[in-house]
Image (tube, rainbow, N blue to C red):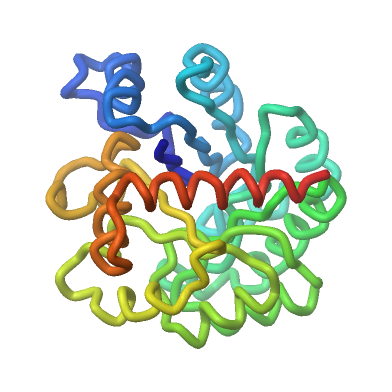
Amino acid sequence: MFTDTHCHLNRLDLSKYDGDIAGAIEAMKQAKVSRAMAIMCDFAEYDEIYGIISKFGDSELNLGMSVGIHPCEDIAVLQSATVERIVEMADAEHVWAIGETGLDYYWSDENISAQKDSLARHIYASQQLKKPLVVHTREAKQDTIDVLRAEKAEHGIIHCFTEDWETAKKALDLGFYISFSGIVSFKNAQSLRDAALKVPRDRLLIETDSPYLAPVPKRGKSNEPAYVPYVAQCLGDLFGMSSEEVGRLTTKNFEDLLAQRS
C-alpha cells in the first residue's frame, strides 16, 4: 500500500533489531510498506545495497535501487561519475532511477562547479536510460532549476522537498514529481505544508530519507522505512484523506513515474 521512494537501507540504525536488517524489513511489511527504493550516494555502496534488495525483495515487498553520486561527496568522487560509468551500473532492471544527484551549497560552496557538472552527467545518463532522476537540492534551489532546465531534464523526483511553492511550480513545469519526507510533519514546517496543498495530487510522492528526518511522532529517533505511513498521515490530514488513501495515491504515482521509462 505504501511506497517509500527514498531510503538508505544500508545506513539504517539496526540496534533495535539486534543489528539484523531482517527486522527492519519485517517492520516495513507490518507497516504495509509494499515498495521501497534504496538510494545510493557513492559507487562504493552499490554491492551492499544490491545485496539487500536482492535478498529481501519478494512478492510482498518490491525493492529496487538507484545509482548515483551525492553532491556532498568530494570533488574526486563527483568527477568519477562519468556518464559511461553511471549508465553501465544503472542499466540493470533492479536499478529504478539515477541519483541521488543535485546541488548542496549548505555543506560546501567550494565545489559548485563540480556539483553542477556531476548533475549534468547524471541527467545525460537518465535521458539515455530513460530512468527517472533523483534530485537533492539544499540552499541551491535556483541553480538546481537552472541546470535541470538547461539540460532539458524532465523525468524525475525532487526528493525531500523543503522549498517554497514557486520552486515546486518550476520543477513541476519541467515534468518532475515532488516528494515529501517527515519534514512536512514538523511543527515549524507550515510553509512546506502550504506548498504541499498546491502540488497536483498526481505528482505527489512520499519518502522517509531514512535513517534521517524521522516524522512526527518519531521525530528525534532514527528513521526507517516503516515510518513512511506517518508522512502519509500528515499529508492526509492536509488533504482530507486517510493515510491509506495517500499511500495508494502515491504508490500509483511512483508506478506512473517508473512506467515513463518505456
